[in-house]
Length: 371
Picture (cartoon, rainbow, N blue to C red):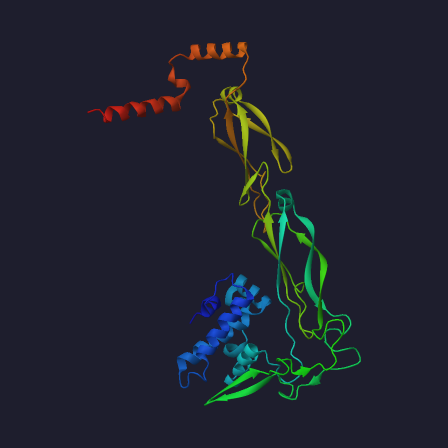
């Protein structure tokens, strides 16, 4: 039987954040845990699927492999593949929910992920660049090296929970583990806190990073910098930094996918007789050939003058929409020349096919409304 989609099992979208995946997992794991559903094989099977899905989607590397290759890209661990027993899984769930330290010792917490909004010009996004960003974040305390204790001293085991970070609460037949109120889940007590970080093991400061922006990025694209988020607590791993791209409006071009669009003003004479115009591109200038009789709003394509896709492929095009201009501020001689042109055209509608078609529609309209 084909395996179900892991995102479907946890009830989240493929764009779900790490926090959304964890929240959904906790809710479903509590609902279908075997201790809450004794002798219910269906609930037990669902619990296995939930555990297996979370094992993959909570791990960035496994999740990436799964997104690219599906079930073939991962060796799912956890309950379904590794044969873990119910007691182990029970401990995993409640240890995760209540922040308990398993096996004693001080509990390490992973640092938070961060997001940075980076605004780029269209030129920078199309050609690629290296951007320097400065952001506030937590970093590991250099004085205590993340322990939170004053140098020369060490944290002591919490006497309330005996270093487990949790205490067991009995409610009828159901036993719950709850965060220790004395050490707040750390499992240890810092009697003499570090004077630099005041016992947190990390301090807040600004850091500057160089971010390589690949050519072709667009608004909404995200660049992940692993380990550049907030430092973890008590020696935990750092979170990740997600740089989200926003493109500024450009005075000439607009972007649609990998194509660029621009409007090109053309005088009436060039539109009528045809000619060649010089138009801008992001890499220089290009010649745009205007055929005789070109109409206002007509669009011409310059192949390969658009954007190189960020993931590779054919370069986009530049689409030039011509805007035919009526001449203004004419002198007497110019007005006379236009008058002669109008007189020479007379009633010949072949010079203005759209105008002729419009007159025919107007005529038919009035014929239909006659009483």
